[in-house]
Amino acid sequence: MEKSRTLLALILQVLYYCKAVSTSYNTFFYQDIFKGNGNGELHFNGIKLRVETTLPSVFTLRGSNVTLPCRFWYEPPLNSPRSVRVKWSWSPITGDREVDVLVAIGHHQRSFGDFKNRVYLQHDLPGDTALVITNVSMSDTGQYRCEIIDGLEDESVTVDLELRGVVFPYQPQNGRYHLTFPEARQVCEEQDAMVATSDQLYMAWQEGLDWCNAGWLADGTVQYPINLPRYPCGGLGLAPGVRSYGPRHKHLHRYDVFCFSSSLRGRVYYLEHAQKFNFTEAIQACIEDDTQIAKVGHLFAAWKFLGLDRCDAGWLADGSVRYPITTPRLNCGPHKRGVRSFGFPSPYYKYGVYCYSSR
Ligand SMILES: *[C@@H]1O[C@H](CO)[C@@H](O)[C@H](O)[C@H]1NC(C)=O
Ligand SMILES: *[C@@H]1O[C@H](CO)[C@@H](O)[C@H](O)[C@H]1NC(C)=O
Ligand SMILES: *[C@@H]1O[C@H](CO)[C@@H](O)[C@H](O)[C@H]1NC(C)=O
Image 1 (cartoon, rainbow, N blue to C red):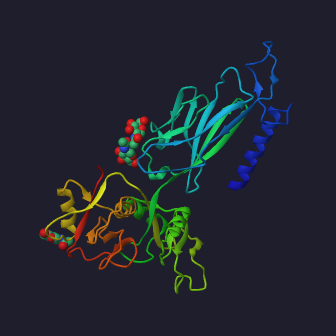
Image 2 (image 1 turned 180 degrees about the horizontal axis):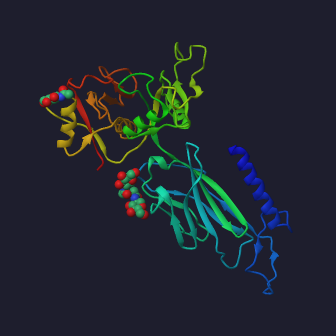
Image 3 (image 1 turned 90 degrees about the vertical axis):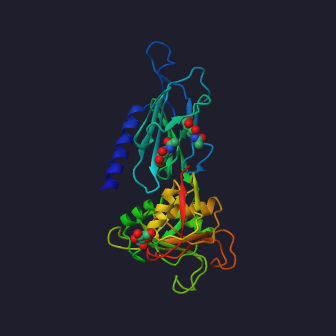
């Protein structure tokens, strides 16, 4: 249904277009009204509109400002500037439909939705229509389209925006394979993270992530990364790789999840204190230190990007107990880098605590 409607829309568009430029088969040519001979006559002058980007994909950090390059020009060059319409739109990585980000004519700009007052055109040079996004959030990732519209002509390029970050498997307190897809999204958000994409999991696998529990990914598929083939993780016969169960039913099937947390501003630290805390005392201890108890995403990001290394188990906001190791050593778990987990101990037990401050 959706497909046939898109097809119909496309046919209508093509018909409309053919009619509009019926004197020329070359759709790159546009009708130049302004440079006509003054008799109201229109003529085609064979000028081409070109649009390009210097970076088809851009990596950035959460909270920073990012510039998505785009520029346009005419071939051959024009003597007088023309008024074009610039439109930036965005398709989220989850494959939802394209939404408007910004529309500009000359120096008038309008931004939309979550991008309102957070984006602007760079306008450094003539033809420069690079998009600046301030305070990038994790949900800004996806494909951006820079479209230049001059009369009948319409050209565009795309730029992918990706975040540097860390992927971590997440299993809630009630154990393995308990999350539907909507619940998976929620638990990642609660850990200051998002459900990871297949690309993010693949990159994490390349960096050595090995996890034998299957988890949801943003596209609704269920996968797990294996570097050391073994039984029962697909068996010894399969080469190392990211194993996939393919798409699963988002409401009926239950798995773990892979969350993605982008590097963060602020700091995560182990609270130095003479005694250990039960879970409620741990939450309170961070508040008394003018911060808050860290979330799992905070700890992973600090481990990966700030090199946090501490051989002391501490409470986190979800009631789990973990510690981050970047330099493996004796009595600090297995001989590899990682965030170690004690699972979800009884809240009466005493441990240290990891706190997070956004400043
Ligand atoms: C991002 O841009 C805004 C407005 O242009 C500016 O106020 C802010 O300092 C910039 N932030 C960073 C991290 O550069
Ligand atoms: C940046 O965005 C986050 C939400 O994504 C918000 O909490 C924060 O206040 C924003 N910071 C600035 C400087 O606008
Ligand atoms: C933690 O200890 C406090 C006393 O310091 C006690 O009131 C509280 O009930 C304890 N909570 C848990 C979950 O053990």
